[in-house]
Image (cartoon, rainbow, N blue to C red; front, side):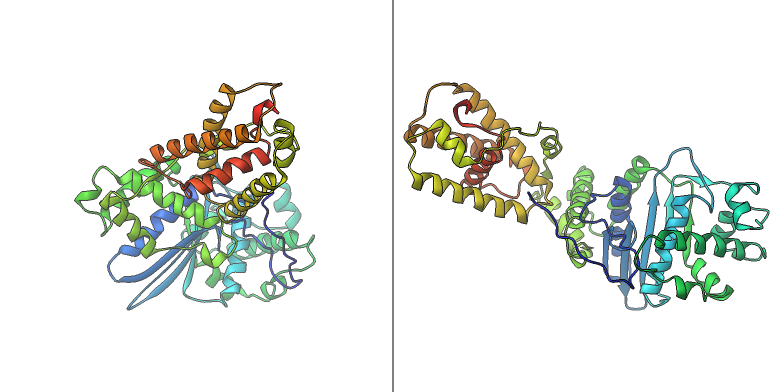
Length: 416
């Protein structure tokens, strides 16, 4: 089984909110990441890079001759919803922003964003939480004040401070560490105003479907776009989304960023005709029924071919191990899942044509059957490679992967 190691967290650090290794991310996040990195091609910007689930849902850093800037955004795609300062999605985002700002040593070079399809709702003065905290609410919704950067009402800052400090305490009370609570408790009105002024509140925004159309427009307006890209905008988008998705799964956060140069390379490859789309059948792999057979390839070979030489079994077992190492290096590549699914389907079709429950195979028969499977799988992948890209396509790796499918019990020799 492929797995990521766990790490012990020091008692003084804030809650680990990075779920990049486990999560592939919502489509809206990746669309926003695409949209933001395309801003890196604006006049005056020399360097830009963006990532999903590194610092917030989406992060962008860009720099030029005259200025630099960093932006961390939380994205909430909720239909027919109103948010208030009491909404968990809002409070949790503010807590994340606070921890990030402190980690950045109160830098003026970072801003935050809350992007949501929801609207602003009004807090209920008689709600249990408001009464329990003894808060006096302003006349207008608190989020309206924050969105307008309006802290003139004397009830705004006290209400925000009580809400956020209460939530911050709650989130850390079950931990062995208390994050930055002691530091935040020392903040005065100026620190709170400075912090809240860094947040850009974007309510009633487009959902992922509408955001996709907006990114297509951004692609067409990008400096890298030319006549060779006309009609292939969705190919560019698909490759950018896949790039963010693949980088998001890497264990090292520093490697999860998509750089301006990576985007330029996508435009170049699409314009030259070299770029290929990811095979969408990757999603089918997870839908296959899990095997119930627990035997490894050695047991399966001996069951179907009792006379097979021990040296042959050992050689094939080494090929299985080699495939496992290859797959470990590619475990976050959806192309690997598509490759495995297509190879699996090809092998199943051929094995069913030769399926018998009683006849034993000779060693020659077993080798011929493996060769037949490899030839058919290689032919199939080579044909599909005209349109789709796969991380492996050579016959040796495909043979090893087929043997690994036997070892992991997705395939069986001769019905055994």
